[in-house]
View 1 (tube, helix red, strand yellow):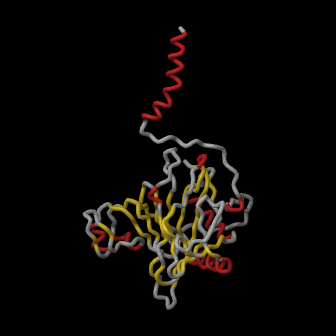
View 2 (view 1 turned 90 degrees about the vertical axis):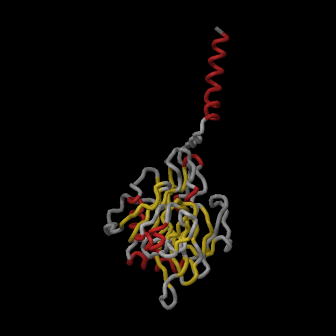
View 3 (view 1 turned 45 degrees about the horizontal axis):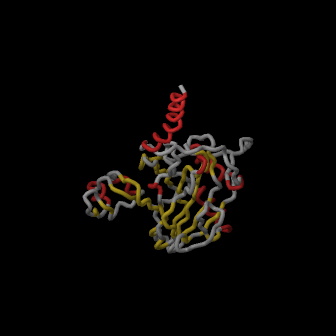
Length: 295
């Protein structure tokens, strides 16, 4: 009898480690209660504010990728909202910094990030943009929009490849991102040159030529390894390949989710992205990040 009990205990104690070792499935994230957060960095919704009146949404959406989820949004910002964002940002822009430890320490490194940033005040117009971002994501439980930030890139301004997420510790992190283009101007109004947002690892499907309004369709690698020059050639010849550059179209946006929805807490490697150098003119973007529980 004793030998039987010992055998059962050995089986129970060893079964789980052995199955984890032999299983090809990645381990599930260990979830913890919500950690302490600096609420001054969150755009907390004021449910008691009955005076805020926001205009109806007029944007349209196009799914670019399902894994990870990447959605292109036309007319996310109105012309009036863009003008307001530029006005309130102008006096508070300051040099952008980078961090390697989740924000505990920051420093300036223009070789990696050369831009100016403004954490903008929460005017009624800004609160309506925050509300739009919440609604777009389905008012998800335990997800909070962070304070909105504008970024200004002058000639040669750029942000090298990076992830918006840095950690999934305890099942919490920056779950989603919007990159919104607020303004693009040049001296003489000849148009912004450069400044696209590049995702080099995203699997790009065969592109309908209508996508060429929003993404760089020129000089991309086709499925057979050759280069198609021009939108028409790209649309007709391009097979599934890798990488995309979104053009900085004022008022439009790209939304993406940062973590895999499989309970592992793993981020999508495909969300590795960069703000490409501005060759001519000035680009102003708006970052809308959401922080909370990872699915």
